Image (tube, rainbow, N blue to C red; front, side, top):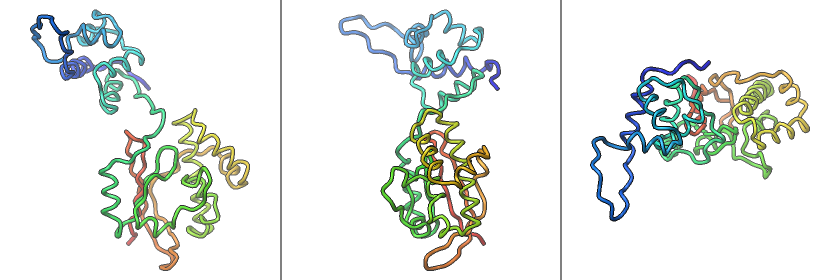
Length: 262
């Protein structure tokens, strides 16, 4: 639950203001001497669309807690990164804004990690909409190629209600996965309530799968993101893995690592 503004809010805001590059002087004007680095308080207040008196009180810790609109305006005026903006919100006693959509591109460093583990450890990446956006060669060898041509062919919830789920996980494992995937879908809709891609997936699965309707009616959310899994490899038979999910919160990407179980 949001709390009051923290004492270091003003200090952080002041330090961010000092890092903003000062505007260039118009041609022909005599350059003014700047006694501080970055923007002046008046310049930042104007950029944020608030009064300079109010901005000064914010820096001095004498103003009431700013609204979310003011915080967003301050973040834009000081060119904060997503992480820096979220920190500003927390200092103000507010929850950071939820992203409107997950990022579409995987971090280059993460792609290098996937490629580096190609022959050793299966790794997949799916986004906050639960669509697989990257996997390495070891994951493809273990899970099989992504087949089909439908709109949801990359979606891990859709995979849970396909015939291949039973082939890969067995009947009991497929049931547990379907329950987990349905709970993840409900969590994703809570995070992106207006996302038509997710809403239409619910409608489609509700129409085509009695098992999905049963799981969906339970109202479960996020049943856990680590655990042991048994998967059936087409040539090596049943293999045991410790599955761990790591979250890239800034992009809302989930990295799933399948470490061979001892």
